[in-house]
Image 1 (cartoon, rainbow, N blue to C red):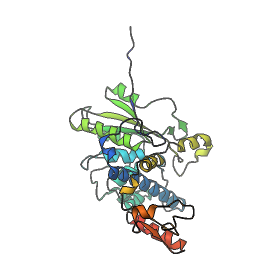
Image 2: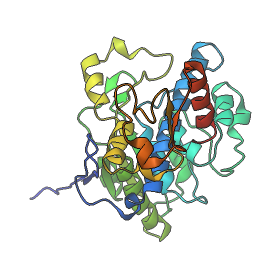
Image 3: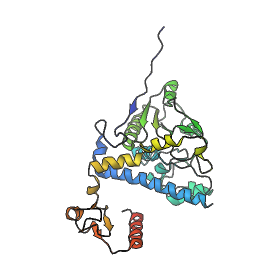
Image 4: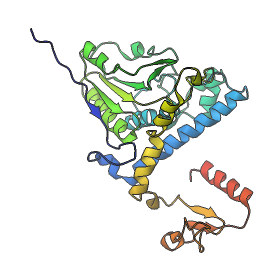
Length: 313
């Protein structure tokens, strides 16, 4: 008797340093699309930082950080159509922001106000589901439904590590397709989830995508991961985080120069090229409208920068 053999396929397009390991999908050749993915991940991390600060000042309840997992939520949301329905767990801040949930609504929810679940834009998306996996029965009526299960495997079940088992194997037991994706590669997440969604929409039934990532934060603000986690392992995980990875690729491809919203401003950054020559030549390449010398006024530079960022620059 021969035992059945099963294989779980793993997908990756950018390695940890931002270098392509195989030809990129078509959408990834569009600089505007990649900048939108990058901006969404940065926005997610910024929201996360603000939420933790609000919780520490007793203005939010217990809050689960998504630090390090931004590519999973942003990538899956970017693959969805507006008419698709998201049934999130509780770290999908990036997906919710991408789909039109406002930071105000999200802060309301984490502050204990259920009006934060009454989304103005994605009206059919469900609220956060804090008990792990409890949103799955709501998505499934039978095994031919057009649903894609995205598992964010962040390596930790609170304090218990999940170093060995692949969760994509659960799909084999259920008799449905399942595969793994590098959850720190937003290009891979968008591509593989997008392919699974296309199959689901055309009657191909459900699909499981396990996104391998790492929880760089505590489990929640009520937790202290230093009690059970080796700091050296966390430091190693930071080398693979998603935002730096995509930023490295965009920089290598000179994608930033295509975005006219990107500007440089500061003391002596223009004609002089900066004190350390970091901006040398930029004013000749991009012109004085995008490379601006300012007076010696650090507070003014910081204020203008924050204001521009708030307006989407």
